Length: 384
Image (tube, rainbow, N blue to C red; front, side, top):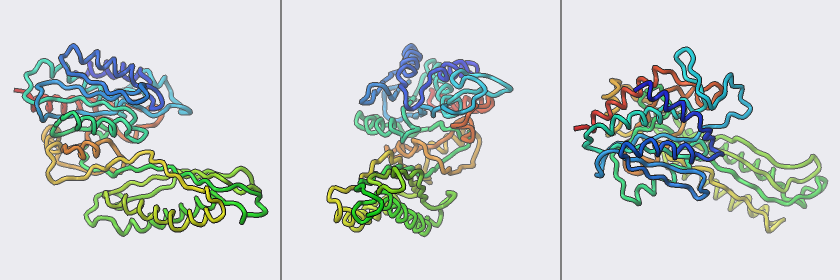
């Protein structure tokens, strides 16, 4: 099955499914691959009509079963120094190079190769192949798909998310919340700062409050936290505003993120910020300029994956891989969204996160072979 997987992977890499572009051509190609195998394939297009999620089922139409999930989008290659065409897979010294080879079209290719084997088996439980769009920009696809699956009554019991973990079993990760705040003040001449509303100044005060909350979060870390660091983190990524030394800036834009280790921390930070804005910043701004405002745009709020003592997906993968070691990671995935749906969830896939997003991204053939071995075990576990 390794050769089939590599052939499929080469075809997937040729689709330049950067998050800013459409993934429909690739999704239709996958649908054409699965249809002859008897899969029930559903495409869920987004509002723009340029992106789609896919949920395809092999086996009986009954509750339960296993979801094998991966995202179809990849990060840009702009300004990266690649030694070959990033959208043409190149094999060299046991490694397969190309954008998305490890993050995460390698796993998708392995599941599609598995589909052929599943179609020839008598399945006692369904296997669902779930492929999403826009994971790299806030898990937009999965955030739309999971509620739709619930609405339609789909009830799988477990999910394996094939993000690159070097086939290590990951049972937990932090959440990821991203925000853009825009401060609308009042421009004026720098010689009379009291007559304007300095948007940059108020943005700096907002950042200062953020940093105070970041320190407070250290004291909220769960005693048994396995994360490094063990607390919820806050990071300011970008602050931009102003046009010249002698002009009071009327607009500033702040981008920041938070990675919660527990759901309550997100509420703690947001409640404190809302109170600071409503009771201190806005009243001061509006005393000079009544139309002054602070707008917050939610870029993405993705739930973390909470480690659970009872996790059937973790136990299945441990049995299939022969590994009893489980870990947690700081990077985010779509796993928490499936956990919120009521599934037991584990993250385990081929390739290393160290290669993701970099030029000359690659996956080792040995990693693909390990993944195929695990997936063949999944097939046996749902077969008569």
